[in-house]
Image (cartoon, rainbow, N blue to C red; front, side, top):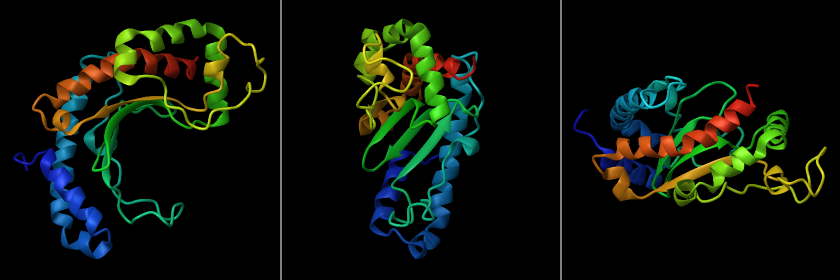
Length: 220
């Protein structure tokens, strides 16, 4: 198992995409479990390293972090049976944003923040902006932050001011967001490199003030 690598993971995902049905997976289930178990061990090591750079980090084992490879066909019947990526969420605390790693054949990235939250969570985030939005703006405008993540991901933004806020609110551009999330796109060379975990730790640290601000807004 220890001799496996991310090349094996992507090779498996490429073949799975061409044979996305239960019969093929049943024939290759042992290979899938070998890759999954290897990745869980790899995530366990990353989990330990992340806990050493963040005193508020929530330990998340690889087994807790990794997502199922099966798509939920009950709610999305038109999707393929299996996903085209391995997803894992570390630093998981119920009700707060996590640190998500997405490794897929059609794109890989690291993401963090609060994606498509419910209305009560959105209300808390907008309340934080109303109270001290200038601190959030400082985080977003930090040069290294902008270099790594650009701007927040736009997802179905409001066309007007949210209820309870005026159109001329000083942070109205941020208030209109329905998701407060960012991502760093990974290229294959970064994933295959021997220092990939170190790269993820650097991304985690750069993302941390953003995630802390949002999570604090949900816990006060």
